[in-house]
Length: 514
Image (cartoon, rainbow, N blue to C red):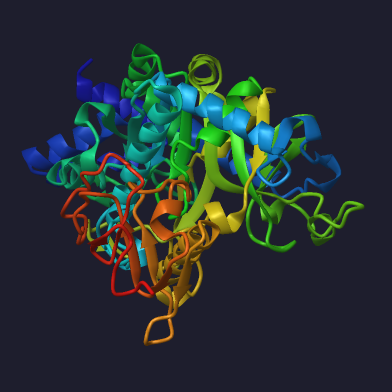
């Protein structure tokens, strides 16, 4: 039996024979395109995905209130409630892991900036700080700084490996961007890019959609596709070969993320956890974020629409929300757990449905762009791995210090460049004030402040730069030797020393100092 006959039989078996309905009209090049698309799809598996996802959607209509319990106190910690000695022990352990090369950062960077109004990868976005550093540069420089801090703390110099998951659409522009900027000072050997998987889009009745007569409509498989991609792209093999024992995973669009956070890493490590989840207290009971909790004795993230208002508003005796652990896509994984999960449970990962407006071809082969949702995209979520471990800890942090998303255009007035810029400026101002400095508003009445990650990771080492000094906005503290970066076009060259540059003048003496 020929390859074509086998393909026809396979498609017919799974009610997908319509994918070949334009075959006779296709050119040889177009036939090659369609063959390639169909070879890359495991038809039997993706059709089973559709059936599972629909079943999951039906099951998720049930509210989970009566089955939920908060995370037990022995599995949770807090940056506010931890003692000074405990926090220092966690930080020391985190620095040890970093200095021994046992830490990797897993960056989820598959998204394009469509909602931001741009056509390039979100990590290339500049939120409008004085330096005009894009998200990729800010996060790369935080890695450089925490490596230096670990070296200062332990006397050993280790590297954090930066694993960046892109999508099919963002791989090439991301790689070109990083190369053109010399990986923002990181060793290229320690920066590994890999693509997440793609899944075909389905009609509401389970038929795979054609985007053109010769191409299947596909979409990225969600941030939960990271697990299969780690295995199939050889990244987990690289992790094990390097001796990396733990990964800090986060999304690219959090401007406040503490990349390779030594306190979080150390907390998870000393607790012997396989998975750690960093959370922030919910801002209000009905905030549309998932909460980390226990359901039927298994840990998981419960979405806000899976519980009733009464449960969302439930409070403890101290007045705090009972279910307050807001998920911010910030996780710790042991590499040992990831290997075991991929060997035993990856195919059991929950699937989610998103109803979308998906372009399709009509019977004449013309592409139609629908005005209302006509199809389904299947996604996997990174947090759905949580039920597969009983070794989980939760670490609560302050939202104003560690979470501000850049998802929407400024017109949305929420999770947008303007709010993210203000949040990080507020954080930088707090660092300066804690170090004994003061900032006055500029002539326009606003306060604009930026501290290079190469100078300070989370406020450390600023006293000799700012103590006893008053600055007038705008203020930009830079590390020695660091050049002004416009749209990420120059690299900082500093090694993270604590002397700073303010408004381009060294040692904190500038036109903003009184």
